[in-house]
Image 1 (cartoon, one colour):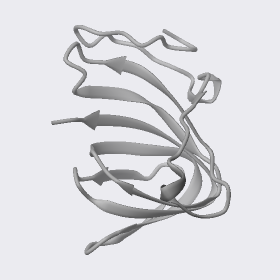
Image 2 (spheres, rainbow, N blue to C red):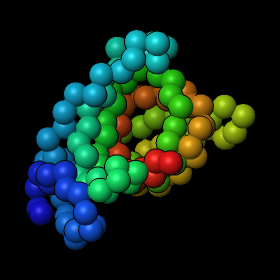
Image 3 (cartoon, rainbow, N blue to C red):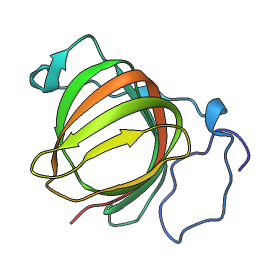
Length: 125
């Protein structure tokens, strides 16, 4: 695949996408997660395992401050900037090219300074 990948299940296919060209769909935030601003989330699942426990995709959030409880995730920031405070842990400064790991159950506060887009791998239990 070279542009918009379609979600697939089953064995992991080999594919490549041009991240800026992936069509992202709205993923409404729970209003209780919004601390300040009017952040909007969009995303696209590029691959999902047959059991639904592994996801790979693209995710984007516009400026604002939100809270979340994380899944087990590895991601790389493609564009934008944010600061992520992990409750009881580190504060992560994210920017283009930053790779990060969040652990399942981490309670986080995301302060998004510039619209942030990331490519991710999530493992659900």
